[in-house]
Length: 86
Length: 86
Image (cartoon, rainbow over all chains, first blue to last red; front, side):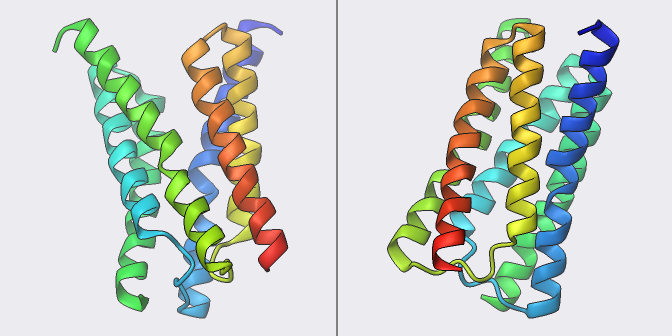
């Protein structure tokens, strides 16, 4: 695989692991049902994603910042919905 | 921040975003309840994590391989539990 193709692969991976949380947020908005979602897991995921974002800032990597910043927004929304619907 | 401290920060972030799925898997095993978990999100997350793993192999990065390999196992378990309990 060429270095360019490898970076494309990484970019596709980053897009998918960021945007994959959209259907989860939409399902909660539609059903108002969050019981089986672990608040511990979502909270830890948010903390980890925030640390990835800071890491991205520290190494000056825009892809790491953007991917984790967006993921943090989506996971923040899922946590807010979880706290609202229980 | 020193380059060493920055790599420690990245390692902590990787550990948290990998291990954060353990409480979710344990909660499903305990409650047998998965209704509010989006299969679309979990499936897409698994695909994205698998691509991150391949990216790690391509760039020869052990941390990317290990973190995403473990995450894939945990998300695979959550998907298997979701398919079982519905």
